[in-house]
Image (tube, rainbow, N blue to C red; front, side):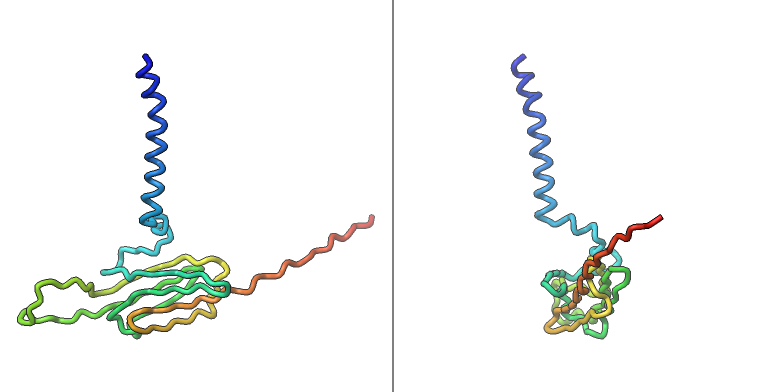
Length: 154
């Protein structure tokens, strides 16, 4: 009888541990970021992206080695930043001796939901050494407006 009580007490602990493990797994692999739509399976490859928030702007760094800047399209609509581009396929002849090719060719497509504080009118982008840098300034915060309550006289 005491063994049965130990099992029933232990079971909630196992479930609690599994939930904790699941949360740690999600945090470790940042699976929560998949919900923002930034990994869209319409491209042939997915560039790695870092997003940094500064006091006056958001800065996005995307690794796009081998992608000419003229092959990158950036747009922002309804608070969603979209980056599309293409790395051209270079035809390799068999006689060059390649035994393995790991660099992905083709198009990519990433989307990022930005907060309402992002200013879509002042977004800038530049590229250097295979890294695309997108700067998204923040809007000025709206100042609180004090509203006076008028008394209604009958």
